[in-house]
Image (tube, rainbow, N blue to C red):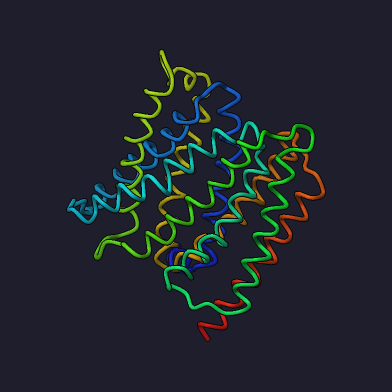
Length: 297
């Protein structure tokens, strides 16, 4: 377990798999009538509460200061509340597999933002990789989700905003990581902050009893809380070990899980252009990764 905690590739595979499971869980929740803001709240509130309890039980501190409050608020918005709202609203329209592909675009946006902020040095191979990846993303977007029921353009646009928001969060967490803060502490604080935002959104966006549909899927709620708690503990550790661009590659593992679960368990199917676009995105990632390795050598 200690070796896994210090292994970037091991953390990447575990984190990506757990993230991938969130996609079919979200589609099943939507089918049960759970509003997107409520399901996103379940994830952040459950993960935040479990992680904070674990931190306190093991004697960990949770001191607040101005820096950490700023960090929690910004990370909560751009890494959790906004992308999860978009994700769970879009999944019923785009499909689990297509939504998963949106995560694969995050590394390209992350690298592009890193270059803009001079966190990474530009080179020809990396720039070409971003171009190839974005070409693939455009091709995927034009297919508009499942082959049998193309989504409205507004839902495709919502899907594309997911990797943009995630990339902003990837870069911000590296730039503003509070000194002396551990990954569990940051995960707990950020998720509890996101839970407050999502609670307000859930109460404002739906009338009556927005949490009532959760009673119909208690096992799904428990499974999601367990998965998200483990995922975000590993997520912040991967941020510290691998850095923002490496972290953003969890989307490739998550997309694979999403495509497999969507096709084999939820009956989804996708056009050849969607698969071609996913291949181009993967080629773009390989190019940008090699460019980074050359710079680090």
